[in-house]
Amino acid sequence: MTAARAGAAILVALACVAAGALGNDERPLTGEQILGRAKSTFRAHERPPYVVYTVVRRDMHDGEPDFENSYTLKIWCRTADRAALMRRVWNGGVYGGATFDTVAFDGYVDPGPPSADIFERALYARPASQAPAPEPAATALKQIGSVIVTRDDDYRVTEVSRDGAAWHLRLAPKRDPTRNRIDELWLDATTYEVQRMRVRDHLYLGLGGQSLEDEFDVRFSAREGLPLITAIHGQTQNDEFETDYVFRDISFPSALPDWYFEPRAYGAHRDALPQ
Image (cartoon, rainbow, N blue to C red; front, side, top):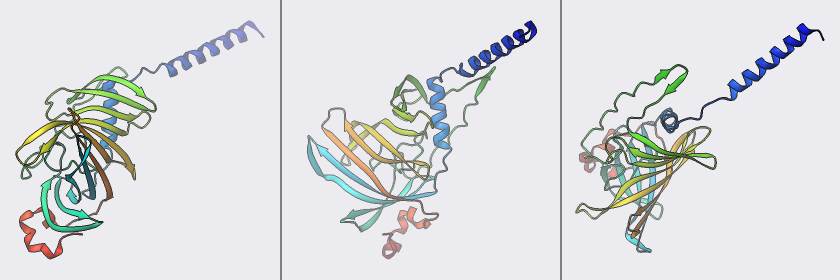
């Protein structure tokens, strides 16, 4: 081999090594970047306009079944404002009259719907007559050189770790802890789909407004690519009460009658209540 060819070979080898080094020199994502990807991935799924589902609630008090607060409801929900018509279920059949409420986390009624946008600031309970607050415009991403910097306006990521094939994030609220209630997230490390979350809630006792701090452990599963809440385990801080919710028989009708979401119309449609 001539000296010129040997020099050329060395240059090619060095170029390949440099290219390989650059290709493998990917900086690890920050917690905020992982959270940003999770939010973008979650919200890329189109939310159905209506969702019909059955929620089974089972309560325990001091380790004993609490039958008074355990029940099964079938719910017809409008996604836009989470207005819902509810009927009781017994032995597989729907019975009794219809009741109206707004399904939401941290409210007197059961959390939901299973297709809820868990990152929505107005996810939590409010008067049924109050329209959901509009989401603020997303904070623009800032690009510095070739590095994209993301900023989340609701949560600060306090810890990032791997839990098997998932990212595990611990979060702290930046704004209002009564609204930004998610404490932990588990995300598929490849797709960034939400698999599990822990969120602060309350267990409401009777109609007098008394409540206990409650921690929800929420599990998700995918249906046609859409992440849905399928189970929740709630436990009060004093371990006195435990509540399990299971969401089943979930469907997404393309339309539902408007009167389902007008409680004053229920009396006129008593013979046409949904089954």
